[in-house]
Structures are given as C-alpha cells and as structure tokens.
Length: 129
Image (tube, rainbow, N blue to C red):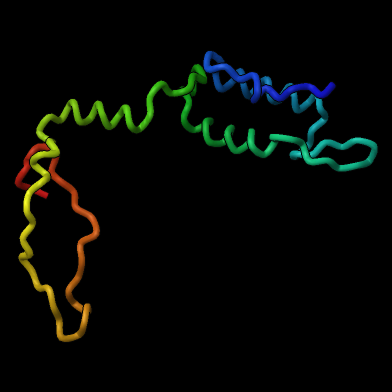
C-alpha cells in the first residue's frame, strides 16, 4: 500500500510549518530526491512533488513568519473593508457623463492623439482624479 501524501490530509488547522514538516518526512520515507523516486535503478517521477514545491514557495512568502499560520483574509475581504472605511467612494458618484476636452483627430492618423487606459481617483477629494 502506498503512503498518502500530506497534501491530501491537510486540514486548515495545521500551520504552514506543520504541513512542510509532514511533507519533508513523507519525502524522506519515500526516498524522493529532486522530485524523483529511485526503485530498482529506475527513475520514477514522484507524484505531487512539483505541485507541493510550487505551493510551498507560494505560501512561504504569505504566512505568519513566527507561527506559520495561513492568512485569514483575501483581496475581496480587504476591498470590502476599504470601501467600508472610505465611504466617500460611492459608485453613484462614478456614474457621471464624460465630456471630451481634448483633441479627437490628427492629420497623422492616431499619431499624437494619445490615449488614457487607466484612471485613478483621489481617495478623499471626489473632484480630483
């Protein structure tokens, strides 16, 4: 019977360091070296090894360095907090009519007209962008 990878049994209550330690133990028990298992002089790709190493690299930069706890938030939650904190940013104020104030043609085709591909609004002054 093949031993199961710690990735399968991962529970949210485990810290990053506990998961990493379990995988390193699994790696040692299965005699995995650089993603391969060597059996009877045959080099076999270790299942899920690369997947774990990618996840390990990703999460190592995002967990609490002292405790290894995973973050309890995400970008959507943080955006909702930001909107709540900054009540001045209301979507109704963004639904205004835009008027062209600049050139919209050029003798050289599109050369020299320029274009805007991004607009940023001032966080506290609705008249500034």
